[in-house]
Length: 206
Length: 124
Image (cartoon, rainbow over all chains, first blue to last red; front, top):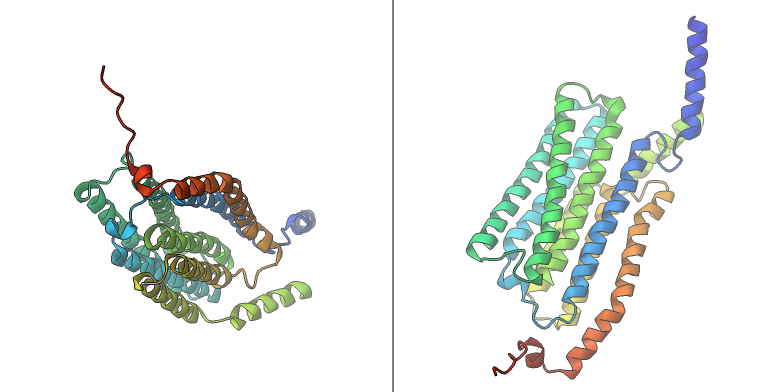
């Protein structure tokens, strides 16, 4: 019986080895996340290209600084950069088998995401209520709300994703051997940071 | 088995041979500060846009290379990462004729003519 089980396990291992992706050996989920991020990057890229096309040479396009708070968004950018650092430290913690480091920095990443979302909610409230901006008003408003809103949804998704990982960590379900799960969540979070870096420049500064 | 161990060891070595995460964080913070400086300066518009885009791309590359570990991953992953950029460039190039047309219209019409609303039809 045990011999049969051993043979089965050996056969299964051979199958797993055969189908193990060569691009991300030992972590097929990472390849899946990269593929998803490539698809997501195409969506963001198309939205930013369309924004550029609408704005290019449009003499009526307002100066973003007349409507948008550059200082606030610079702080939001800094918060996302900080949360990317806490994320890599969390990954490093779980890889080293240092659970307390992993849990602490993962919590820091979640707080960073929540701080970003809170500041974005205040910004939107100010623009919608006090500045009377609306997605229906003109192209400037529509492109602004679509790009920042789509990104905000990604941040919200990332906060939920990170919270699930953190709670599983608190329950002791993310040991060192499952560090790959945190690494995959980290890829998503860094992508969200990367996209914001581009949005900050194209929508707010230029 | 030995090959796997060697690969893991190489990867671990590669991960630690690049700049530390804190160094990348400092680079990103400094680049963001430089971006705000460029934004506040009275440079010619084209130069300002060029500098801001270059700084944003530099920051994006730093995040992808060191936080997302693209620098140490299998080079095949670069193909996946580069595909969206190629498609976005294609999308932009496909939009170029429309952009050129609008640029031509702008050159041959005064800004007032472009911004003024169409005249109302005469009332009979």
